[in-house]
Image 1 (cartoon, rainbow, N blue to C red):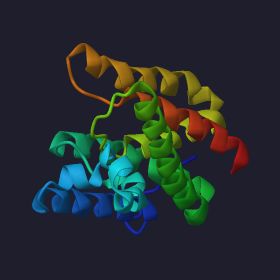
Image 2: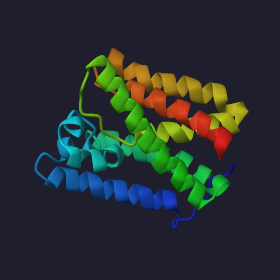
Image 3: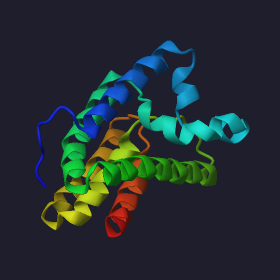
Image 4: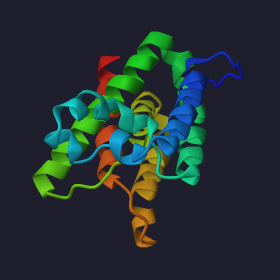
Length: 178
């Protein structure tokens, strides 16, 4: 898998869309709560129809956004070239939505409802897919996934580690399908 440097890629458009959504979440009153994945999805039916998707485009701060967009740019462009635009978009969107469903199930079963935001779940799907398809990189990616999932907890940073692991597992499974 080679990365390419073209500007006109679906990955780059996803990055631009995510940046626009981040700006909107900060303009709209309670945008982070409205568009993040949280208990509102169970209390109000209208939230169910979009929070599973909108959480992927909502972020907890500019650092969170930048970090996720760098990783999306790195892995997304490689996978988009390898898979093609349609399969890549299916992997990213379906993977992100299914990661949100898994995250919701986790929160519901533990009673630990927080506001989950970020593209990390969908990005973790891409990393799981990549780990399956490129075995020579698998160990490094697994170590990286564990590090980004658990190291921030040591510093008291709130992180939805379970979303990362759910997404990674889904990506690995998608690797057998796509």
